Structures are given as structure tokens and as C-alpha cells.
Image (cartoon, rainbow, N blue to C red; front, side, top):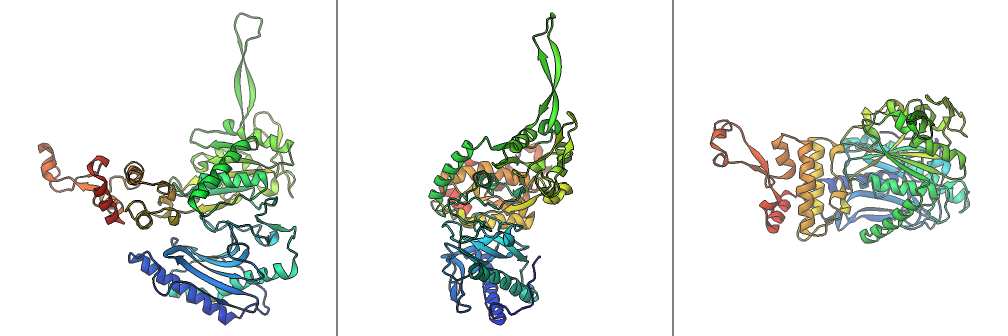
Length: 518
């Protein structure tokens, strides 16, 4: 848990009234989670959300979903002609899929419609975005772990204090600052050129949570200086993303991509020596000479220094799979924002091979991606963790829609809940596995050829856990009579299992089996 404090002065809202509202919201979240745990998916009576007035200038609205239960219920405050769909606003977001830091108090920013006002940079410049696909334009001011009524009672005063601070900042933006204040960030106007991204960031999450997807958007926003919002509608979102992807490819002179692996070394990434055959020698045989060869990092770093008016991005995919110390060498120090050329403490170092003085300019951004099922953040080099900001990506259940009689949304949510219990949230499956399934054949193919092999990798040899995660219709007990004679005595005291094959089931049998699981 972390939170911040505010000055001891008269609050902008009535504290008792605010605490009562916060308690009502969080207790309703508990009700929602209990209903979902019992297998319900619709909101039902009493959770339709509510709206009201906090002061003569501030209104509030809470929501727990529309029809189906929301994965991230919210409580928002708005005024000064701001709207939740178009504007900035204080907001509480409760991520019901998380166990820790599940309640976030945020400086909210509308995602799909352009906000005409922005939060001052001095307020949000060092804050991370809310993790996930939805609400990820909002800045996290404070987080709490709230899983029980006791957690709520212990933290309600601190929660109210932090919410009051965000509301106070919200009021000050409109009372003290003009609409076009230049000291703001994250406006969605087309001419916005003040995109607040850290120089070094790592996007991490389980397989299929949209890490590469979001990396494309972030890199494009950095080099263009413009926000790239995505529509909520899935079809329109895919069309808009295709446009952004084409723009991304057109900007490849400013964006470079590299994948770390176990055999990658400093000589590949920074600078090494390579042999060159000299065929112009007057002798009968060619001569071999050796030259310095710049790696991808030094190449883009030099380009960025030569073009200080442009931003450049280096994307490092699977950053956790390489030996960071071996690959980066002395560059770990040069990546630090305060040590960049043009920063407060600029630093240059001599490269190992050429002995050239080398520094990293502050217009070169590093975006790493990290698959948490391969390696946890805790295992990363401490020097890297200290210099990078980390942005988690989580499975977004609402992006998975039902298909032809298959309750895919519920199946996806319950499967991830089982994985989280049996392993941890780092090994959950992402929405990209199922979000593009449009037919039974699509679901069947993904289930047998992607999800089942992944679960076998996670729980290899542990058939009891595999049955819990996949369901008994997909993990079959081999009957004694089906075993060859020479194996019957050997397997008499143990269970033998095999995975169901895609050819074992008709479409209707598959629907029945997978819906039973969900």
C-alpha cells in the first residue's frame, strides 16, 4: 500500500459524507465479488450504480457495470462542465481481479473522447498509468489493498484523505489555471505535443495481455507527440489500430526493435569488433582486417544525438530473457534519466573497444517488454529495476465475447481465477488468446492448440491440477482395460491420464464440455 498526504486545512468536501460514500462503494464491490464467486454474471438488484451531489460544484457517480458485472467498478467525481466520457476527473477504480493494490485513487482522464483540459504536469509527471487496457490514460495517485471489511475500516481515513487531495487538485485546476495552461499533459487534442512518458519503462504481464499491442501505441505517441486513443467498439478499435500500425511502420527511422535472448552480448547491442575481408590487396590471397561494429543501441543513440529535435524509441522485447549486465555493461549508468546528456548530471563513458566517449541523450526512450510467466520482476537486476518504471498489463475479461452458445467470457474469467490460485497472477492467460474468436471452430482451435499446451507447460505432470484448470472433459483418465497388458500391473495403483484430442469431440460435445467448465 502507498498513499500521500495533504496539508492540514479545511477540506474541499465534507469528510464524513465522503467516508460514507466511499464505504458504500467499496462494500458494494464486496457484494459484486461475492455474486461473481457464486457463478453469477449479471449485476442484479441493488448494484445498478448511483449518482448524487457532494457539494454545490461537485457531483459523483458510481458504476458496477452495465448488464454484466464490471471487472473494474468505479466511483468518479466531476464538475466544472467536465464529463466522465470527455474530461478529467477524480476517480476510484477497484480492480476486482487483483489481490493486492486493488483500489486505485486516480487523476482520471477520458480515453475515447478528447478532454479539453489536462492535469498539470507537476501533479502527474512522476505517476504511473492505471494498469490494463481500460482506464489506462488515468494516473494512479495512491493504491490500497482492500479485501475485507477490516481492511476498509483500517484504511478509510487514509483513503478519504487521499481522495480529498485529488478533488482539491481538481478544483484548483479550474479555479487557478486557464484552459490552455501550457504546464499540462495528456490532452487528447490532435496538436498535443506534451506526452508524459518516462525515458525508461518496462511493460510486463502474462502471455497475451497486450504488451506488444500497447508498445506500438506508446512508441508512436512518443515519436509523434500526439495521443493515439482507441475506440471502445472492438471493430472500430481494430480498424484504428491497423491505421496506427501502418503509421508505426512509417516511423521506423525513429523506432528500432530488438529482442533479447540468452546468447546476446554487449558486442551485439553496443559495440564490438568484426572481421572484414580486404579483396583489394595486391597479394594472391585476401587479407582479414578487423573493424569496430556498432550495435543497434549505439546506432540509434548516435542518431538521436544528431537529431535533438526528434524523439527516438528503442523497443527491447523480452528484456528479461537476456543477461542484462552482460548486454548493457557500463550503459546501465548512462540510461539513468539524471545522467542523460542535457539532464542535471550529464555523464559520458569510454566504450570498451573504441575508447570513444559516449553518452545517451534525453530524446531516446527505452521501452522493454517482459513476459512474467518466464521470469518475475523480483529476479531482474536491481540496477535495471531502479532505473526503469514498470507498467503492468492484465487480462481484460471484457474484451472476450461469447461465441455461438459458448459462454467464453465467463470461462476465461474463471480459468484465470483458477490459475491465480494454483500458481500466481503472473501465469494467467491474456485476452488476446480468445478475443478474436468468432466461431466454434476458432474457439476449438485456440483451446486445443494454444491454451491446453500452455497449461501443460505450467502444470507439467501434475494431472490433478490440469484437471482443475481445464476440466475433466479435456483431461481424460485412461481406463485399465485401455492399457496394454504389460502396463496394467505397473499402473494398477496409479491413475494414467491423457489430453483429449480435437478429433475426439464434435462441435456440440465441445460446447457442452467447455460450458460445463465455465
